[in-house]
Length: 326
Ligand code: ADP
Ligand code: MG
Image (cartoon, protein in one colour):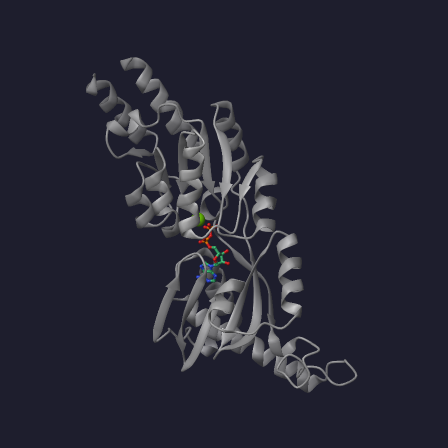
Protein backbone atom coordinates (compact mmCIF):
# COMPACT_ATOMS: atom_id res chain seq x y z
CA UNK A 1 0.00 0.00 0.00
CA UNK A 2 0.99 3.59 -0.47
CA UNK A 3 -0.33 5.48 2.52
CA UNK A 4 1.41 8.63 1.31
CA UNK A 5 -0.97 8.90 -1.64
CA UNK A 6 -3.92 8.49 0.69
CA UNK A 7 -2.55 11.16 3.00
CA UNK A 8 -2.10 13.48 0.04
CA UNK A 9 -5.71 12.73 -0.89
CA UNK A 10 -7.01 13.65 2.55
CA UNK A 11 -4.90 16.82 2.45
CA UNK A 12 -6.39 17.81 -0.92
CA UNK A 13 -9.83 17.19 0.51
CA UNK A 14 -9.22 19.52 3.43
CA UNK A 15 -8.30 22.29 0.99
CA UNK A 16 -11.65 21.80 -0.72
CA UNK A 17 -13.64 21.79 2.52
CA UNK A 18 -13.92 18.00 2.53
CA UNK A 19 -12.84 16.60 5.90
CA UNK A 20 -11.88 12.95 5.68
CA UNK A 21 -11.62 11.11 9.02
CA UNK A 22 -8.67 8.98 8.03
CA UNK A 23 -6.79 7.79 4.94
CA UNK A 24 -8.56 4.39 5.11
CA UNK A 25 -11.87 6.14 4.43
CA UNK A 26 -10.84 6.64 0.81
CA UNK A 27 -10.65 2.85 0.40
CA UNK A 28 -14.26 2.50 1.50
CA UNK A 29 -15.41 4.69 -1.36
CA UNK A 30 -14.49 1.92 -3.81
CA UNK A 31 -17.34 0.64 -5.96
CA UNK A 32 -20.01 3.05 -4.79
CA UNK A 33 -23.06 2.77 -7.04
CA UNK A 34 -25.80 4.28 -4.88
CA UNK A 35 -26.08 7.56 -3.01
CA UNK A 36 -28.80 7.87 -0.38
CA UNK A 37 -29.67 11.49 0.35
CA UNK A 38 -31.53 12.73 3.41
CA UNK A 39 -34.01 15.44 2.45
CA UNK A 40 -34.30 18.07 5.16
CA UNK A 41 -31.08 20.02 5.63
CA UNK A 42 -29.22 17.92 3.07
CA UNK A 43 -31.02 18.40 -0.25
CA UNK A 44 -33.08 21.29 1.13
CA UNK A 45 -31.86 24.31 3.06
CA UNK A 46 -33.48 23.08 6.25
CA UNK A 47 -34.58 26.67 6.85
CA UNK A 48 -38.24 25.76 7.09
CA UNK A 49 -40.93 28.41 7.37
CA UNK A 50 -44.40 28.27 8.80
CA UNK A 51 -46.86 28.56 5.90
CA UNK A 52 -50.11 28.28 7.84
CA UNK A 53 -51.49 27.91 11.31
CA UNK A 54 -54.95 26.73 12.09
CA UNK A 55 -56.03 26.48 15.68
CA UNK A 56 -58.83 24.06 16.41
CA UNK A 57 -60.97 26.85 17.86
CA UNK A 58 -61.08 28.88 14.69
CA UNK A 59 -62.00 25.94 12.55
CA UNK A 60 -65.69 25.73 11.70
CA UNK A 61 -66.10 22.03 12.23
CA UNK A 62 -69.08 19.72 12.57
CA UNK A 63 -68.06 18.58 16.03
CA UNK A 64 -70.97 20.20 17.84
CA UNK A 65 -70.13 21.76 21.13
CA UNK A 66 -66.47 21.01 20.70
CA UNK A 67 -63.71 23.59 20.61
CA UNK A 68 -63.67 23.15 16.87
CA UNK A 69 -66.94 24.95 16.27
CA UNK A 70 -66.78 27.66 18.88
CA UNK A 71 -65.29 30.30 16.64
CA UNK A 72 -68.27 30.37 14.31
CA UNK A 73 -71.80 31.55 14.84
CA UNK A 74 -74.69 29.24 14.01
CA UNK A 75 -75.11 30.98 10.66
CA UNK A 76 -71.53 30.12 9.81
CA UNK A 77 -70.38 33.72 9.66
CA UNK A 78 -67.66 34.67 12.05
CA UNK A 79 -68.71 37.26 14.62
CA UNK A 80 -66.14 39.84 15.60
CA UNK A 81 -66.11 38.30 19.05
CA UNK A 82 -65.37 34.92 17.54
CA UNK A 83 -62.62 36.38 15.39
CA UNK A 84 -61.07 37.99 18.41
CA UNK A 85 -61.27 34.72 20.24
CA UNK A 86 -59.73 32.84 17.34
CA UNK A 87 -56.88 35.32 17.12
CA UNK A 88 -56.30 34.84 20.81
CA UNK A 89 -56.30 31.09 20.43
CA UNK A 90 -53.90 31.36 17.48
CA UNK A 91 -51.39 33.33 19.49
CA UNK A 92 -51.87 31.11 22.54
CA UNK A 93 -51.26 28.07 20.36
CA UNK A 94 -48.14 29.63 18.84
CA UNK A 95 -46.89 30.64 22.27
CA UNK A 96 -47.19 27.12 23.70
CA UNK A 97 -45.92 25.45 20.52
CA UNK A 98 -43.04 27.94 20.19
CA UNK A 99 -42.20 27.48 23.87
CA UNK A 100 -41.96 23.72 23.54
CA UNK A 101 -40.04 23.84 20.25
CA UNK A 102 -37.51 26.28 21.68
CA UNK A 103 -35.93 23.20 23.27
CA UNK A 104 -35.52 21.44 19.90
CA UNK A 105 -33.10 22.13 17.07
CA UNK A 106 -35.08 20.35 14.39
CA UNK A 107 -35.84 22.47 11.27
CA UNK A 108 -39.58 22.16 11.99
CA UNK A 109 -38.91 23.41 15.52
CA UNK A 110 -36.89 26.39 14.26
CA UNK A 111 -39.70 27.34 11.87
CA UNK A 112 -42.24 27.29 14.69
CA UNK A 113 -40.13 29.21 17.22
CA UNK A 114 -39.30 31.86 14.59
CA UNK A 115 -42.96 32.28 13.70
CA UNK A 116 -43.91 32.45 17.37
CA UNK A 117 -41.27 35.06 18.17
CA UNK A 118 -42.27 37.15 15.16
CA UNK A 119 -45.97 37.03 15.80
CA UNK A 120 -45.80 37.52 19.56
CA UNK A 121 -43.36 40.39 19.26
CA UNK A 122 -41.25 41.80 22.00
CA UNK A 123 -44.20 42.99 24.09
CA UNK A 124 -44.94 39.46 25.19
CA UNK A 125 -41.36 38.73 26.06
CA UNK A 126 -39.51 35.59 25.14
CA UNK A 127 -41.08 32.22 24.62
CA UNK A 128 -41.84 30.21 27.74
CA UNK A 129 -39.30 27.38 27.96
CA UNK A 130 -40.64 23.90 28.69
CA UNK A 131 -40.25 22.66 32.26
CA UNK A 132 -40.13 19.13 30.90
CA UNK A 133 -39.06 18.14 27.43
CA UNK A 134 -38.85 14.97 25.42
CA UNK A 135 -37.68 14.54 21.85
CA UNK A 136 -39.43 11.73 19.98
CA UNK A 137 -36.80 11.38 17.27
CA UNK A 138 -38.31 11.47 13.77
CA UNK A 139 -41.79 11.92 15.21
CA UNK A 140 -42.04 15.14 17.22
CA UNK A 141 -41.67 16.57 20.70
CA UNK A 142 -43.55 16.71 23.99
CA UNK A 143 -43.27 18.56 27.29
CA UNK A 144 -44.82 20.92 29.79
CA UNK A 145 -45.13 24.61 28.95
CA UNK A 146 -46.70 27.04 31.42
CA UNK A 147 -48.31 24.11 33.20
CA UNK A 148 -49.79 22.64 30.01
CA UNK A 149 -48.88 19.28 28.56
CA UNK A 150 -47.96 20.10 24.94
CA UNK A 151 -47.39 17.58 22.15
CA UNK A 152 -46.29 18.49 18.60
CA UNK A 153 -45.60 16.16 15.73
CA UNK A 154 -46.81 13.63 13.24
CA UNK A 155 -50.24 12.06 13.20
CA UNK A 156 -49.17 8.77 14.71
CA UNK A 157 -47.44 10.53 17.62
CA UNK A 158 -50.87 11.94 18.49
CA UNK A 159 -52.40 8.47 18.29
CA UNK A 160 -49.67 7.04 20.51
CA UNK A 161 -50.58 9.64 23.16
CA UNK A 162 -54.31 8.98 22.95
CA UNK A 163 -55.13 12.29 21.29
CA UNK A 164 -58.37 12.02 19.32
CA UNK A 165 -58.23 13.81 15.97
CA UNK A 166 -61.31 15.35 14.39
CA UNK A 167 -62.30 13.90 11.03
CA UNK A 168 -61.37 17.03 9.06
CA UNK A 169 -57.72 16.84 10.12
CA UNK A 170 -56.95 14.03 7.69
CA UNK A 171 -58.17 16.03 4.69
CA UNK A 172 -56.25 19.04 5.85
CA UNK A 173 -53.04 17.05 6.20
CA UNK A 174 -53.52 15.47 2.76
CA UNK A 175 -54.06 18.85 1.13
CA UNK A 176 -50.95 20.32 2.76
CA UNK A 177 -48.90 17.27 1.78
CA UNK A 178 -50.08 17.27 -1.83
CA UNK A 179 -48.81 20.87 -2.02
CA UNK A 180 -45.45 19.58 -0.82
CA UNK A 181 -45.75 21.03 2.69
CA UNK A 182 -45.30 19.29 6.00
CA UNK A 183 -48.17 19.39 8.47
CA UNK A 184 -47.52 18.94 12.17
CA UNK A 185 -50.27 18.57 14.73
CA UNK A 186 -50.45 20.22 18.13
CA UNK A 187 -52.23 18.87 21.19
CA UNK A 188 -52.58 20.72 24.49
CA UNK A 189 -53.49 18.80 27.65
CA UNK A 190 -54.36 15.74 25.61
CA UNK A 191 -56.73 17.61 23.33
CA UNK A 192 -56.13 18.26 19.65
CA UNK A 193 -55.51 22.02 19.30
CA UNK A 194 -54.32 22.81 15.81
CA UNK A 195 -52.32 22.19 12.68
CA UNK A 196 -49.17 24.04 11.68
CA UNK A 197 -47.84 23.63 8.15
CA UNK A 198 -44.20 24.28 7.29
CA UNK A 199 -42.30 24.21 4.02
CA UNK A 200 -38.70 24.11 2.98
CA UNK A 201 -36.78 25.14 -0.14
CA UNK A 202 -34.34 23.10 -2.17
CA UNK A 203 -30.73 24.33 -2.06
CA UNK A 204 -29.78 26.09 -5.27
CA UNK A 205 -26.95 23.68 -5.99
CA UNK A 206 -28.78 20.41 -5.23
CA UNK A 207 -30.08 19.68 -8.76
CA UNK A 208 -26.63 20.19 -10.26
CA UNK A 209 -25.10 18.00 -7.54
CA UNK A 210 -27.57 15.20 -8.22
CA UNK A 211 -26.73 15.39 -11.94
CA UNK A 212 -23.02 15.16 -11.09
CA UNK A 213 -23.58 12.14 -8.83
CA UNK A 214 -25.54 10.41 -11.59
CA UNK A 215 -22.73 11.15 -14.04
CA UNK A 216 -20.37 9.45 -11.55
CA UNK A 217 -22.49 6.31 -11.93
CA UNK A 218 -24.31 6.62 -8.62
CA UNK A 219 -28.04 6.18 -8.41
CA UNK A 220 -29.60 8.74 -6.07
CA UNK A 221 -32.26 7.75 -3.53
CA UNK A 222 -34.12 10.35 -1.45
CA UNK A 223 -34.67 9.12 2.12
CA UNK A 224 -36.76 11.12 4.55
CA UNK A 225 -38.90 11.02 7.64
CA UNK A 226 -41.14 13.59 6.01
CA UNK A 227 -44.33 12.76 4.12
CA UNK A 228 -44.57 11.35 0.59
CA UNK A 229 -45.90 14.59 -0.96
CA UNK A 230 -43.13 16.79 0.38
CA UNK A 231 -40.54 14.17 -0.54
CA UNK A 232 -41.87 13.79 -4.09
CA UNK A 233 -41.88 17.56 -4.67
CA UNK A 234 -38.20 17.78 -3.71
CA UNK A 235 -37.28 14.65 -5.69
CA UNK A 236 -38.94 16.04 -8.84
CA UNK A 237 -37.20 19.36 -8.38
CA UNK A 238 -33.70 17.86 -8.22
CA UNK A 239 -34.13 14.86 -10.54
CA UNK A 240 -34.26 11.92 -8.13
CA UNK A 241 -36.40 8.96 -9.24
CA UNK A 242 -36.31 6.78 -6.13
CA UNK A 243 -38.03 8.07 -2.98
CA UNK A 244 -38.37 6.51 0.46
CA UNK A 245 -40.61 8.70 2.66
CA UNK A 246 -42.10 8.57 6.18
CA UNK A 247 -39.00 6.73 7.37
CA UNK A 248 -38.47 6.67 11.12
CA UNK A 249 -34.82 6.83 12.24
CA UNK A 250 -34.70 3.01 12.55
CA UNK A 251 -36.23 2.71 9.05
CA UNK A 252 -33.39 4.82 7.64
CA UNK A 253 -30.73 2.27 8.71
CA UNK A 254 -33.00 -0.51 7.47
CA UNK A 255 -33.30 1.18 4.06
CA UNK A 256 -29.50 1.29 3.73
CA UNK A 257 -29.23 -2.37 4.83
CA UNK A 258 -31.82 -3.41 2.26
CA UNK A 259 -29.97 -1.64 -0.54
CA UNK A 260 -26.78 -3.38 0.58
CA UNK A 261 -28.56 -6.75 0.72
CA UNK A 262 -29.63 -6.10 -2.89
CA UNK A 263 -25.95 -5.83 -3.80
CA UNK A 264 -25.59 -2.06 -3.76
CA UNK A 265 -22.56 -0.23 -2.41
CA UNK A 266 -23.96 2.76 -0.61
CA UNK A 267 -22.89 6.28 0.23
CA UNK A 268 -25.27 7.92 2.70
CA UNK A 269 -25.46 11.70 3.05
CA UNK A 270 -27.21 13.30 6.01
CA UNK A 271 -27.18 15.98 8.65
CA UNK A 272 -29.51 14.95 11.45
CA UNK A 273 -29.44 12.92 14.64
CA UNK A 274 -31.90 10.64 12.87
CA UNK A 275 -29.36 9.98 10.09
CA UNK A 276 -26.49 8.89 12.37
CA UNK A 277 -27.16 5.14 12.35
CA UNK A 278 -27.64 5.10 8.57
CA UNK A 279 -24.40 7.11 8.10
CA UNK A 280 -22.53 4.49 10.12
CA UNK A 281 -24.17 1.60 8.26
CA UNK A 282 -23.34 2.83 4.76
CA UNK A 283 -20.02 1.92 3.09
CA UNK A 284 -19.36 5.65 3.09
CA UNK A 285 -21.09 8.10 5.44
CA UNK A 286 -20.99 11.78 4.54
CA UNK A 287 -22.26 14.48 6.91
CA UNK A 288 -23.16 18.07 6.12
CA UNK A 289 -20.88 20.39 8.09
CA UNK A 290 -23.97 22.47 8.80
CA UNK A 291 -25.58 19.49 10.52
CA UNK A 292 -25.60 18.06 14.01
CA UNK A 293 -22.51 16.83 15.86
CA UNK A 294 -24.04 13.39 16.14
CA UNK A 295 -24.20 13.08 12.34
CA UNK A 296 -20.66 14.45 11.93
CA UNK A 297 -19.33 11.96 14.50
CA UNK A 298 -21.03 9.04 12.76
CA UNK A 299 -19.77 9.99 9.29
CA UNK A 300 -16.50 9.15 7.50
CA UNK A 301 -16.44 12.47 5.67
CA UNK A 302 -17.79 15.91 6.53
CA UNK A 303 -18.38 18.47 3.80
CA UNK A 304 -17.87 21.84 5.47
CA UNK A 305 -20.09 23.92 3.22
CA UNK A 306 -23.53 22.38 3.29
CA UNK A 307 -23.28 22.13 -0.50
CA UNK A 308 -24.23 18.80 -2.03
CA UNK A 309 -21.77 19.37 -4.89
CA UNK A 310 -19.00 18.75 -2.35
CA UNK A 311 -20.30 15.19 -2.08
CA UNK A 312 -19.61 14.68 -5.79
CA UNK A 313 -16.20 16.34 -5.28
CA UNK A 314 -15.47 13.90 -2.43
CA UNK A 315 -16.31 10.88 -4.59
CA UNK A 316 -14.17 12.23 -7.44
CA UNK A 317 -11.26 12.90 -5.09
CA UNK A 318 -11.46 9.42 -3.57
CA UNK A 319 -11.50 7.73 -6.96
CA UNK A 320 -8.60 9.80 -8.22
CA UNK A 321 -6.56 9.05 -5.10
CA UNK A 322 -7.27 5.32 -5.29
CA UNK A 323 -6.24 5.27 -8.96
CA UNK A 324 -2.81 6.64 -8.12
CA UNK A 325 -2.09 3.77 -5.71
CA UNK A 326 -3.45 0.97 -7.83
P1 ADP B 1 -35.93 14.23 7.78
O1 ADP B 1 -35.69 12.76 7.53
O2 ADP B 1 -36.54 14.84 6.56
O3 ADP B 1 -34.68 14.94 8.24
P2 ADP B 1 -37.06 13.80 10.46
O4 ADP B 1 -36.92 12.30 10.50
O5 ADP B 1 -36.10 14.58 11.29
O6 ADP B 1 -37.05 14.34 8.92
O7 ADP B 1 -38.52 14.19 10.91
C1 ADP B 1 -39.62 13.52 10.37
C2 ADP B 1 -40.90 14.20 10.76
O8 ADP B 1 -41.08 14.15 12.19
C3 ADP B 1 -40.96 15.67 10.42
O9 ADP B 1 -41.34 15.88 9.07
C4 ADP B 1 -42.01 16.14 11.40
O10 ADP B 1 -43.30 15.83 10.92
C5 ADP B 1 -41.74 15.30 12.64
N1 ADP B 1 -40.87 16.01 13.60
C6 ADP B 1 -39.57 15.75 13.87
N2 ADP B 1 -39.09 16.61 14.81
C7 ADP B 1 -40.10 17.46 15.09
C8 ADP B 1 -40.24 18.59 15.97
N3 ADP B 1 -39.24 19.04 16.74
N4 ADP B 1 -41.45 19.20 15.99
C9 ADP B 1 -42.47 18.77 15.22
N5 ADP B 1 -42.40 17.73 14.39
C10 ADP B 1 -41.24 17.07 14.32
MG1 MG C 1 -32.10 16.04 7.84
